Image (cartoon, rainbow, N blue to C red):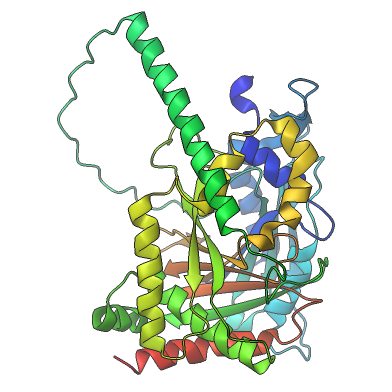
Length: 438
């Protein structure tokens, strides 16, 4: 069915897949149970719930035409239990055994000939806690879609009561000529919009050296997990303005500044982050796949004063929001979605190698529901999302606001970043420094 065909953007994520560039998203979710847990029982429960989610039953089917296209087909032998593993952590010398284990597990690519997801239940955490690790290919869903999958695996939460508005008046009938004129106008508008995005990307591309924090692609991955206090973030917002995301970007700017200074790297200008933006509010009819645009935000690592860094971030994000999510160089996912799939098969890998010409890192904000979440009655304690690394990128950052914390997942190229602990410490220090200015 045409409706099951991968979009051009979904195909682009599939084409970026490689041994050194696995294109799956991930998450590390920790739980605090009230009683001892059985890993096999949790695995069976997750398998039962996964079987009810249509997105997880899909596998890729290559198409001969159009050239380079693919579609989703239900796996005839689908068995969710094959995608779910259990593991018990053993005492070791690692400072954070869960992060070490999750790093190794997340670094392994998914099997493209099977449904593109895996789960692992990890027990042996302090105080009887356990974790669930998730990886889900970016071709299958974007961040919002991944959250929907995760919610479907957890205990059911009460649905928010909806207030019914007035019943809309029926639309007036329209002539075929009016419909054709509207479609022609929309097509012309898309061509103009696409040309504007392409022009903005060319203007935004930077000359060599492409990035101060770029590195050689490697299959090695390391994961850092940092929890910030949500009350501290609110204090900063109250004192200096901006959104929670603005404050997090300012904190990350300060952390990257300290980390780069310790590595002897120059502070002669900002870094640039790609901020993914969901377009699902505009095209809510699609349940899966990617509905994304993006902003390019300058991270003022060259600015010493933490309050001034926040102001510069706020100005950069305000300019992006004023322009809208389908304008500017950051809207490259929109442009990618308008390129034929066959072109992605030929050119995406080359285009991915050029990603550092436009941005140095990805910083994504993962929206979570503001309600308590549980699995088999055990409360969710922490949620650390993980974003894949583009070719030559050494750091990918994802943040999720849940209950009393803002949880930041830092995935790095393990061959290029040997001091991940210094970076995670720098995030905590940067947040404390900005809090002390309130």
